[in-house]
Length: 121
Image: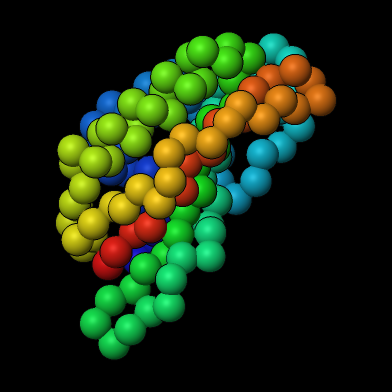
């Protein structure tokens, strides 16, 4: 199971990614430069120690946008969606580890908002 793909597919099925360009592993210059489309990064995070019964990989989501109000709003909507729809096929819980962090302002002036999710499988 790829936690990044599972979380991406779960959010896409709930129409949470509309208007966001998905990017995996790292943001590239074309995602962070002024005038770029809004994007959402799916990056592996530390997670927690697996046991013989379940794994707990972590995923960091980061929304990169030129519109700080929209970035925070979108990250909050994803958080709320995962709280309300916290299970999926093969996943017993999408756990929000902290509230939305940000904005971090990039050199290009774009804003970055992060959300950390543990995927219990």
